[in-house]
Image (cartoon, rainbow, N blue to C red; front, side, top):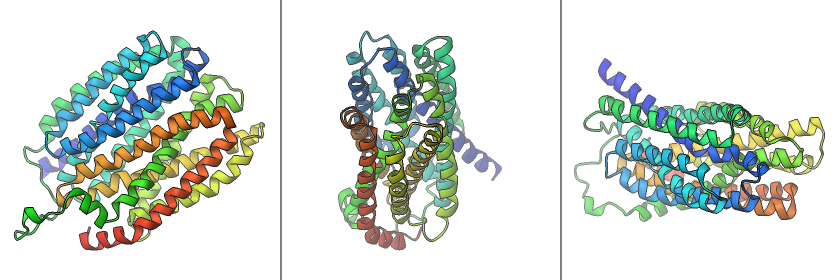
Length: 417
């Protein structure tokens, strides 16, 4: 029993390490983007294209990763993703112009896609659903802690050396973390997944098993995908552009705008623990209902943000920063419900990784739209108009949560999880 407990703890710890390294090597460009713009290494449009390339290839890669995660050893997929990401972080800062950075960061997006669906597969196969949800919280918090470390480290690294050194550091860290993960996971991972969830009945004929799309339609997953797109737009749009917004609207230096953004993951971690606590209750235990509530609350916060963003004084700067951070935190909580919890519901059907791949792909469809869309809207119409568009995006998310609610609720009752 002690060995099994140790193995499960080790599995969670190693998945957290891998995702920590993944986020560190994924967020490098976002964190130093404002400094690269200030250094004239990029234009706003090219910066948007680089970020969009990562999100597009990350989203597309999720579909393949989700499929492969249910077919191939997950630890090798994750190790491969970390190693390729390390190479991309090494290459990007030595590219002679911004246009050549686009394909490099696109490859990084595909490499990053090899992490999350295999993590979902490993955790859902070896943990009960309740422990799986808790493990997801730990792994997700690892990603946010990675973001905090990067936001604190990057300004120091830039002031002492340059923004290029941030990428080189990420390369070294990814290689070390990947090697530790691969070796240690071979020790703690059971030779055969436990599949703690209730198995299918013996009389079930595999030929009668519904297709993936039939399962999506029956269980209300298709409207959830639209909710996830809206969530991805909001979450990654705010995270990616808040340093630039702060620099341009309030005339701050790139280093201070990067540093001020460290509060984003702090708010997100607090929000995640809160939503995990209430996920055990009747309201948020239904992930779709919880997501709809979070979208509604985000709309209420974006309305005053639209007006306060144009007022340049210390009090308004603080209020705007707090409001933006809370909205982003709500979207991270929404992400936890729809990306972490929903796929785990499908472990009984053997499709946890596949569902996770589709869900994550939708996240980065929204993220890709936000990365370039916010660049265009902010340039031509200003930041007030950009924030106004956030209200519309949240409204779409809330409406499709309502559309998914009935079928998904029926699925939860039939699933008995």
